[in-house]
Image (cartoon, protein in one colour):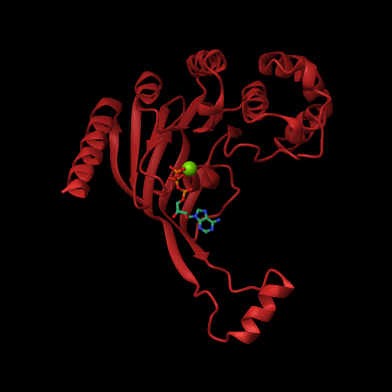
Length: 253
Ligand SMILES: Nc1ncnc2c1ncn2[C@@H]1O[C@H](COP(=O)(O)OP(=O)(O)OP(=O)(O)O)[C@@H](O)[C@H]1O
Ligand SMILES: [Mg+2]
C-alpha cells in the first residue's frame, strides 16, 4: 500500500494581484491608469507523478523555486492541485515554513494544543504527550511565553517536536532544520532515523545534500516544476550536482 500518490499533478499560481492595498495605492492607480501590475500565471508544478511507498524515506531536491515546498503543501492539503490528483494514506505531520501553523500571540503551550487539535488529537491525547513535546524541544522555560518572542531556532524546535510527538504515519520536513543549532540538528536527525526505523514514511526537502544522502534512499529531483529524475539517492544526487555545476559554468562563460 502506498503512502502518497501524485497523478499528473499541476499547480498554477496567479502572481501580481491587481488589488489596491491602501488608499495611497488606490490614488496612484487613479492618477496613473494602466499602471496596474499584470497578472502573471505561473505553473509551480507541471504534470508531476510519483508514488511513495509506506516506510520509504524520500528526499525532494531542486533549485530555488522548483516547486518543492508546493509539493509538500499539497501533501498536507494546505493547497489543492489545479489539475491531477493527490492521494494520501495516513496521518501527515510536518514542519513546513518556519512558524507556519503557529499563532504568534499564543503561548507555546497554547500552540501545542492548537496544533495537536488541528492534527486530530483529542485534548487528553495532547495532554498525554505535552511533557514529551516540551522536553524534546528543550523549551521548558519558554512554554508560557508567546511564540512571537521565540527565536527562529526555538520556533523550529517547537514545530519539529510537535510533528514528531504526534506519531504521524508520514513525516514531512521542509528545510527549516537548518535554523537549529548543531546539537539540536543532530538530535532531530537521530529522531528522524528512529521514526524511520519504526516504519514512518519520511519526505525530506533539503539543499543539504550530505544529509539527504545520509537519510534517504530515494530522491525526486524537481526542475522548474517538472519531475526531472526519480531514483536511487546516490544516482539522482550526483546527476543533480553535475547539472548545477554545468549550469554554473555556462553562467560564468
Ligand atoms: N502562494 C503563491 N502564490 C504565487 N506564487 C507562488 C506561491 N507559492 C509558490 N509560488 C511560486 O511557485 C514556485 C515554486 O515555489 P516553491 O516554494 O514550491 O519552490 P521551492 O522549490 O520550495 O523553492 P526553495 O528552494 O526556494 O524553497 C515559485 O516560482 C514561487 O514563486
Ligand atoms: Mg521551499
